[in-house]
Image (tube, rainbow, N blue to C red; front, side, top):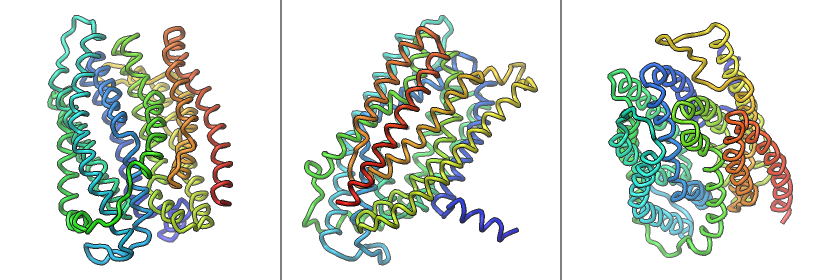
Length: 453
C-alpha cells in the first residue's frame, strides 16, 4: 500500500512544496464549502452580497502591487542559483550577493511607502462604492468591517513581497507550510466568528490575525537569513529602471487586465442586480477559485526552479520539468472541476436544505456553472504558460492579457445588462477559449525563439 502511494506521489509530481501548498488549497476548498454553508445560513442575502463583493473591491490592491511580487521571486532565484547557503548566510560571487541584498533593500522601502496609499485607497473606494450603490432600506453594518478588512489587506500587501523574496531563496516548501497553517487557523477563526454572530466583521478579524501568524513565523524562521542579506555590502545593484521596470510595466498591465477578468463580476452584479445575485455569483466563484489555486500550486511552486534552470541555460531540464508539471496540474484541475459539478448536482438532485433554505439556490445553475468551469480551465492553461515565459524575465503575454481584460470587461457589462447571468458567463467562456488559443501560440513561438537565441 505504501509503495502504491509512493508511485502515485511520483506520478503526480508531488514534492514537499506541492504537498504543503496542495494541502493548503484542499483545506481552502473544503473550508470554502463549510464557509459557504455557514455564510448561507448565518448571513442574510444582502449581507452575503456585501461579503463576496468586499473581496472584489479589495482586489484593487493589484493596481499597486503590479506583479512585482512574482518578479522579486524570479530575480532572487536567478541570483541565488549562483550562490550557496551556509548556515544563516550565503556565500559565492560577490556580485550576486550584492544584487540580492540590493533587491531586499528595494523591496522593504518600496512596499512600505506603497502600503500607506493602499490603505487610503481601499477605504475611499469602498466607502464611495457601497454608499452609492446600496439603495435598500435594510440597515447593514458594513462600515467598521470594511475598515478592518482594509487594514488586514494592507498588512498582507506589506508582507507579501517578503514572502516572495523568501520563496526566491528556494524556501518554497517552508513558505507553503506556513501558509497551510495560516489557512487552517484563518478558517477556524472565520467559522467561529460567523457562529458567534460577528457577521461581516469576521473577514477583517481573521485577516489581521492571519497576518500576525505570518509575521511570527517570518521572524522566527527567516529573520537571521534576511538580516544577513540586508547587511551585505552592496557594490552592485539590481537596477529598477533598467532591469525591473522594463519587465514590470508589461506584467503590471497584464495584472490590471486580470482584475477585469476575475474581479468585475461581483461589483457589476451588485450594482445592476443587487447584493443577493452578487452573493450567488460570489459563492460559485469562491469554489472555482479554490480549484484554480489548487491546480496552479503545481506550477507556482516550481517558479524558483524554472528560473534557476533558465539562469543556467539548462533548457532541456526546464522543459522536461515544465511539461510534467503542466500535465499533472491540468489533470488535477479537470478532476477537481468535475468533482465540484457532481457535488452541486447531488445537492440539487436531493434538494439539500440548510436552515430551511435550498442550498442549491446559492450557486449558479448548470449551464452558467459549466461555462464558468470551462473558462477556469482555460485560465489554468493560460496561467501556466505565462509562468513559464515570465521566468525568462520577459512578458510576452501583455497584449494577450490586455485584450482578455478589455473584452471580459465589455462582455460583462454589455451582456450582463442585456442577458443577465447567462450573458455574462457565455461571453466570458467564449472569450477565454479564444484567448487560450492565442496564448498557446505565443508560448510555442517564444519558447523556440528564446532557447535558440
